[in-house]
Amino acid sequence: EWAQALALFRGLRAAGGATSAAVWNAALSAAGAGGQFEEASTLLAEMRAAGFEPGLRALNAVLRAAESAGEGEAAMELLSAMRPGAEPDAASYAYVVGALGRQGRAELALGVWGAMLDEGVRADARSFAAL
Image 1 (tube, one colour):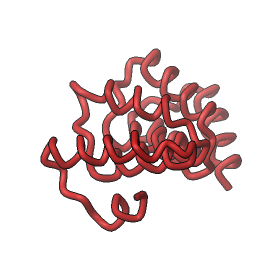
Image 2 (tube, rainbow, N blue to C red):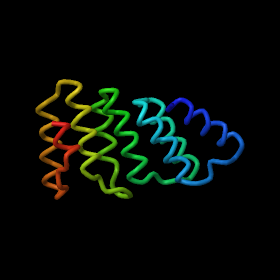
Image 3 (cartoon, helix red, strand yellow):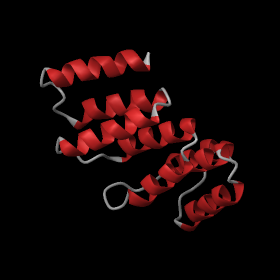
Image 4 (cartoon, rainbow, N blue to C red):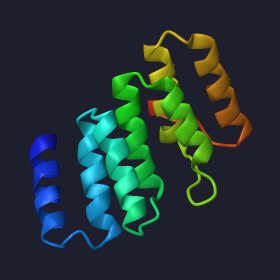
């Protein structure tokens, strides 16, 4: 399913049709849902090169892929680089906590959780589940 969505995006882009942030967000969401971290990272770089600044939805899609792939360090780097431009939400932090948890880095994951609370981001069901 995600692979078909990305193939459609690649075809649309080759035809000059990837001309809005919404189209890029859809492609990133597909990569995120499929847990395709490398693909999501590549798309994020291509999005920026095409002149689109990724918003929270796009960045969370990459964080979701990072969580699925257990890419804790990369997730932390992306979370740190979100500002300015996008303010991390509970899902952003949950993806990072989940990625770190997949690596067995519980103490660091708890530190990220604490940073979320210190930033005034309210925990939701998704973020609690990541713990």
